[in-house]
Image (cartoon, rainbow over all chains, first blue to last red; front, side):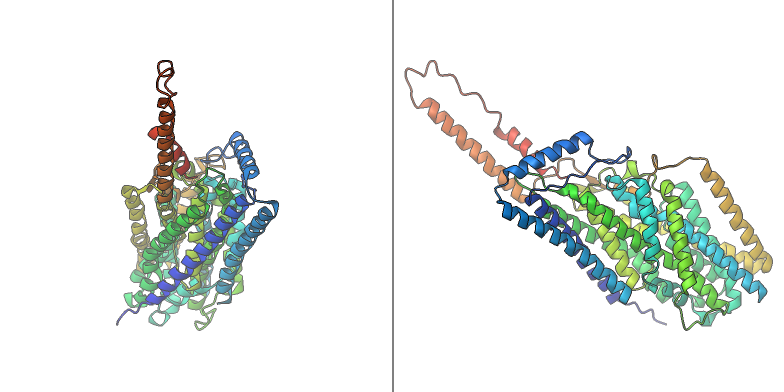
Length: 110
Length: 450
């Protein structure tokens, strides 16, 4: 009695996971890049968990926010261009969310 | 028939307990990286994971069908005689799961379940009752391929995340924003965990219902009450087990950056969700570990610590045969002593559970000292503090040095031009601290990835 293995199913999983992951990461990264270009560098507030590593301190966060504001001021972009970059950023985040919803709906509707 | 009903009730109770331990054991998979990078507070992370595990359990039933209608050949066994075997298999799985959890050994709840069931079936029924083709294609091969797949995807995703956000002008790169993103991706991992792990218990309960004749074998879909019970139990286990399991976090994932964590989690969630849709019963622990290693390698200047990888892999490889051995032993008691064997198994199970519970009470674990098992895989990759520059960064450094050299030559030419009256008094121009060392220092600052 031979054992039949559906190798194509493994290829399908790899392809689907690869495309999904790259779309989500790609859109999110583009969104962040455009957000910075639009003069809004994200600085995430520190968390209260002493065991966590690489968590920036409040002082570091303030310094980073100051540096980001300074860099934004120096940005040669006009206000309209900055606004456009920000719209692009939010659009990218929305596309990232849509990619996830599309993936989930494919699983549910299967 | 009354005995059968009693055994079904025992199987359901034990399966739900397994589901609880599964949620208890696997919280770290979803929440290790966001807590490590500071994206979520542990308490919030655990609550979020519990809720999404609950939702995830309702999304798909393919994995459940693999177990209830795939790996065991119902036509090769006497249905009522098989019920105690399922019970023995569950005891094998739970015993191994609890033992590895308490000893801190790397293990997989899912493989413990399959191992227990297969071992018990081999001893309690016949080898022909197991569809080895199905075991190979839906359990063993996914176990070998999925961590590798997740690792490759995480590697590529990390590269993409860094490439997209890299700045060459020392301005903010926005990578801190990946911390926000991790709340979203860790939620996806929790959801994916619900779609795969909760279904394994649904599959076992459905198999028991089919064997008892309470559900038609032609309809392998789990009933709504089964889905609901399993979803609630795994969510409760996730919530209750959070602190204890997220234990080695602080020591383990010491070098996971937000961009890397985001990519690792996206890869884990994508791999588990795609596999769940096709009915592959995966170990979420192994997929998460593969992603953490892959994303670590995706950072520049990283190296694999093969000794750590080997230690983790040995733990994984041991899970299936070890839990099969425990399951087989439990089944052997049923074969030797019949009904008394079932009672011995039940007593043993209760004794193990109580003993482990009491043992676990000795060490107090809460949100301040909680750590994770998946975190070990973070140690498998060593990343340089100052990674080597990219090709473009090297080109920029070369251009900067050439510019500095040209400036110095110009300065020298300027100083040496009016030879004569000023030459005696002319002070040498102050040596600029630029040169190679400064250029390299600034280059290292520029290349230091966050």
